[in-house]
Image 1 (cartoon, rainbow, N blue to C red):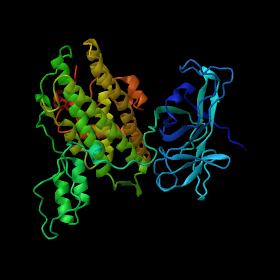
Image 2 (cartoon, helix red, strand yellow):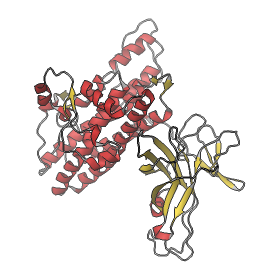
Image 3 (cartoon, one colour):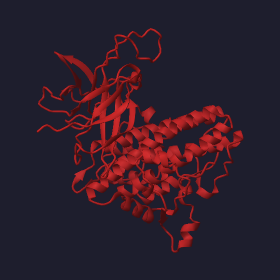
Image 4 (cartoon, one colour):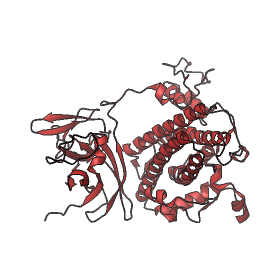
Length: 471
């Protein structure tokens, strides 16, 4: 008996003209929530009689392009396939994994090595400017053909690198452009003492620790790197200066400075969840490769956000470090250091979700002041932050499913145990829902950390401690 295939609407065909391949993130609508990642390949452009140079696809000889879809990762070791080379092999096309050179037929996923990749049928419905792309619903574990999937994110893959790019320490530096990573350690094996000169970035510490043979010294360095160093001295969250309403240039600078502070901690937090939970397992199963790849992408985004904000501060005649900052985000990271569930809940489903709420309000203030350049920066940040909350929701629900517990109940308990004060509105319900957060995740939500009475909860800073209101 043949199973009837179901398909997911992806986009208008015109939307694929910007790139030749795309990351697709899909999510089931009905619980339990399942996420799935695919790659969509466009081999050629639609054939038509285009003569006007615009994005129109109309033409008497119009024909749909060659489109393929398959799993985002290689079935060999789970490495990403986004930059894999596409080759013509006899009468078909194959993708070649850039990591170990395994080939996979884009049509049926077969490989000359005997491995098999999952491929998905792609349909083009309609024609010309009305053409739409639909992809066969994923064959995810725990899903059935009757389940309904939705597109969460479609992101073009940069064609700048077609091979795995070499690691650039300059581009990956967490804090300083002047980090000097020693090529080898010169510490005596018997003397576990800290070197006189320590790195001034989390990345610098990670390289130094990996090159250190003495296990005692490894522990000392790890303890020393527990809190990322800063070039500015943090103060208590409630003692930062008032940022105003964005009407004056001074108040806009204070807003952008506060956001840049959040982003620099967000960089560390993304790398920290990778390093801190590298050996984490649930029911004897280690975290999948996709977990670490997702947070590396988040770290990349946060670094982009910081540089955009830092550059904008310079354009406004200021610089990052010109004003006081607070370390509320890192305090929450310390509180959740021993629990992956708590870390994702507090940092990514409370703090980053709070950013989704506040960014549109801040953006409105910048637009009202006529600050178009700062508005463009915040629009980029906001779009990315929705995907970051989606990442948090994906892995929190995955973890809860593996542990056999309800995601909403577990989340609310984590907030109660590891957060102080109320999560206050207004809430950006539309964008929270895009990220997977239904009202059950945030309505009437409060933490009891350190509280001895209901009055203590009412008086606590709540979400302002980790994501201050900027309006």
